[in-house]
Image (cartoon, rainbow, N blue to C red):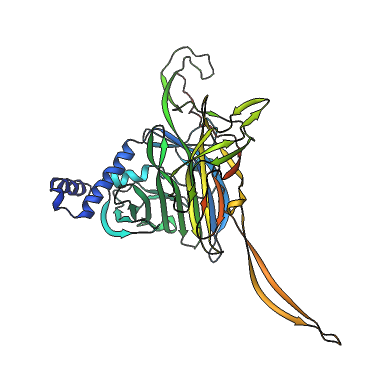
Length: 447
């Protein structure tokens, strides 16, 4: 099978383009587009936030905890660290005592399907799951070709994969990847393992890079226990390699001669703001319900920021970010969930990393931090006996509070209505947090 797939693609490209079915041409261009994105993926790091949930058989899904890690993609590999730590691990499991974790979500899954020619791919038609036309393709990777390893209950095994992906048939950008573990050995005690990854382009340096935005990993055990990890990738930035010479026989000796050790360093010298500063940001351009998730947005600082009689951030400084989430719901009346991720302040003295939690929003445009929906449940009328009977009309109501996942550095709020338009000047209030600066792996000393 490993030999037959490359031959299939070779045959496709040797046939004149006008004789090929449109879906085959689209697939070839999607593969080229993803292959180019993977091959040109720079060394970069993101904050990975994992909200973990668990559901016992016959029970409701309940939150367990939330983990925050730094993920570094460098040299085709994924590395993980606690925010600000100097010790990097190849597996994320090292940072948690128990529960489900996964890797390979950042870029490695794309290689098996689009780069290494390990998948058998079939066209399934055009769909519009998010209101825009997307081409769907189903794929299968055999257990022999797959590198998908599952560990559970003391057992470890490679499994096959079956799934689908959706891409824009005009730009050929990958939108979503969804796959299940197939041919699961019984010793793993899993009935199903599924993964869904949503992709978008993120500005890193001077280029827009295809990166995962969110992911859901779900397992169902043979005993009916279900685990769900909802993952968000935020505040991605580029890195480059820097070599350091270390001399001496011991690690703690003063540097004197030895081999080089490559360490990741920020690609751009962006500064960071002190924590606990309140910053008001107003939109520079309107934002409405027709905006696309992933679109760039711009705002400006309102009022400037002072600390110890020194201007840290002048009034009117541009703030750059993107739309992380824009979803419409009707379960508690029409409303939208909107999430904004501002990442950079463009000050006269140089760019500053914007890493803050949303504190409040301008309520005049129908925006709310927490959605409270009050509904009338029951109405009635009761009377009292006696010489002067009276009637009392009563109404019973109930309230429902709707919350969203908390993601560091991403501000989420609600807007009521079947549509909305936030004008320029719409204000949001943020509180800066200590940015989890990625730390380089330790440098090994020469013997």
